[in-house]
Every structure is written in C-alpha cells, then in structure tokens.
Image (cartoon, rainbow, N blue to C red; front, side, top):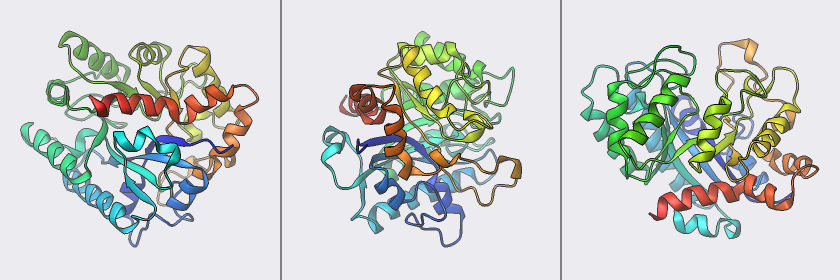
Length: 330
C-alpha cells in the first residue's frame, strides 16, 4: 500500500558520525538508508542525535548535527528540511523531509559541566539543524538529568527540571521512550505543576502489556500520552516486540488502537547501524518482515485486514502530521 509514512526515530546520524566512509545511501549498511526510505514511501524521517553518557558526548552531538547539515546539502535531490509548510503537503512531496531530535541529553551536557552549557549547546544544535523535534533526557542508563529505562529508583533530577524549564515554549517535545518509570512520572508531574508548554511523546516505544520489557510503555504512561494528545511510535527492534514471534509487531499496533490511541499511533522503527554491536545475542536485531524501511507498504497491507483506510492513514502519517504541525505552527 502506497500511503505516506512519517517515522519518528532512526539513528542514521550516529552511523554517519562514527563509522568510517559511512554514507546515507548505503542500503547494505543501515536499514534507514535513503533508497530504503524511498522504497517504503517514507515522507518524513526524524533523525536522532544519539550520544552515550561519557566524556566527549557534546562533541559527538555537534558532529552529528554537522552530518545532518551535510546530508541535506549533499543529497538535496532526495531530502529537504521538514517544517510546517512541508508537513501540510508532505503527501505531494517528491523529497523526504528530515528533522533532527536528541536521544539522551548527555549530548547537551556532560556530567561535570555547568548546566548553562546544556542550554547553550541546545541553542547551537538548533542553529545547526534548523529544528529539534524532541529530546529524551536519558538513554538506558542514569545521567545528570535522571534515570534511564534500565535503572530503578532514579527519577527526575534537578538538572532535568532545569532543562524542562528551559525548553518550555520552544516547540520541542519531550520523549519518554528511554525513561525509567520514575523519570517519566517526574517529567509529567513537573510539566503539570510548573504549567510548562511541552508536548509529550514516546518516539520509539511499544507496549509493556503486549511484551513485558522495561523499554516498553506501561499502560499507565501509554494512557498519559493519549490524554496529552501525543504520539507513540511503534519500535521494530526484535527485543522490544517479542524475541521469537515476528507477528507481535501487529499486536503492538492493534493494541494501541484498542486502548484508545487511535490518534496517537505512528511508526518509530528505531533503525540503526548494527554491524559493530558487541552483544551477539541481539542479532538479528529485526525480523525480516520489518527489517528495513522498504517494508512499510507490506506492513500496511497486512494491517489492512484489521484496520480501515482511515486508521491506516492515521498510523502511517496523519497522526504525526497533526502532532508536529500543531507544535511547529504555534
């Protein structure tokens, strides 16, 4: 089915920044390469600036921002900057709209620098990329901002509060995909008590009710994203779908519709460079039916057995189009 696709998370920028001779058109190396995005009819792709919690994270984030600029310039015949005007008519565009995001605020500030450097770094990354769609405060582990999804007992820290205060009103969403439950609770509570203007989403998360994994959204937080009219991007990684059952991806999607996320469901495939990943037990990272971005038409075709055309369009692009259009036009 040739319905436009908005995908809310991929890691092509860290691939370009870290792998020698990397190029965004190499389909044999990364599952979100430009030819695969074109084959899958992806019309907007969010490109995460991913960093780990270690010295050099700020420099690596800046390098990825430059790689983003370079991709826009070098492949200008295939990609362009996504903005509100692009979103309004993305189904008519021949190019793929790109927008940057931040996965792990360690890229904004290493553990020992003054917190004001995080604000300056964010402003610089926005200047380099044109826009930051969303920020996730953490990745798997703890940092100065809060607890990652593999931590327990670590919620929102003071620096996390200060960063939330800083981004309020700046047309940047907060991403719950890599938070501990305690951090997610802290983020939502701080937004509410301080009356902050910050949209909420989970850019690449599945449902814990379907597959019990800490990376997946609990029912409580899924309902919070729904209540706040956010987005939930279904993740294609095998570890977060089901170790053995490839059909589980459809169960996650249909579960979202069943619990009331009709206007929140979207795709957040989480394609990244896997060839240098040290934990061999994670291979293969993706089941064949969702192994790269070219698979979107066949995924939608299968889902058409259970979802209407209107529901498929919402999942594929209309929910993402509504969410980002509202933020970017404010």
